[in-house]
Length: 295
Image (cartoon, rainbow, N blue to C red; front, side, top):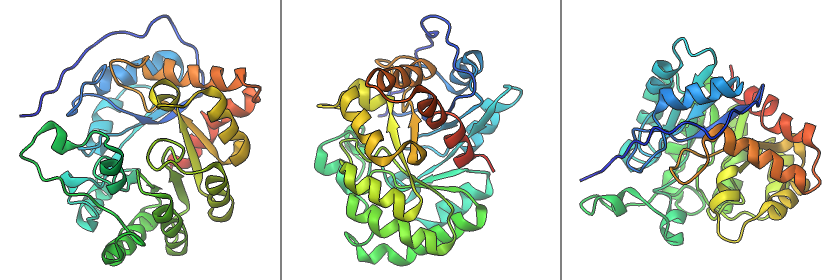
């Protein structure tokens, strides 16, 4: 049986982060504990001066939740669909439905990607032992999914939505980005490429960003929770990839993380503390992600 715990605790102190836009935040309800529900987290963003956010659920479509949470909120709230087991994996039907309901971001498999299993990271089957341990991949790891992937990127292109790479491996991301570009997808996000999954190198991320026009995400979650990761490592990644190719997000919402607005602000402060340009970092947390998502 799945257990959801909702902990409604306000941010510590008052934050001022005018203009920031967080493309990656987790809220309750979820299969894992979250610090607050959609509306509470949206309120925190509003009070911190953010212009918007994207709600992400590894095992839930969030387009409808975003509409409800954003109503009269005073900022832009968007949602999307992650192609994990609950959505049938690499499933064009799930993408079609999500886009028809206003999804702005489609993530390739995350918690049910083959990389997640290989790394021993949490998955739905870890929460409920009766659920299949099926994993998903795309070419070149699983050539059999090519037709479905091509249908999916065509739909994303038509909707002018964002394709995010999820937890796919570097080889899969390198295959996917040119396929998406050739299909007409203009909004491409490499999901935290330097995180444990996919553990992409700085050089690979820099090349893929440069060649295919994809943005590379760096998250506060990495700074707070990724083993072996610190501000110096993340700063080196940003330097190599280049400010104009980087999106900073929180990937927060966990009870043991700061509230998402505070987490993203801390990430900017930590990177600035490593000698990076604060104004450029602020653009990576505001103008660049907002331009990526907002139609």
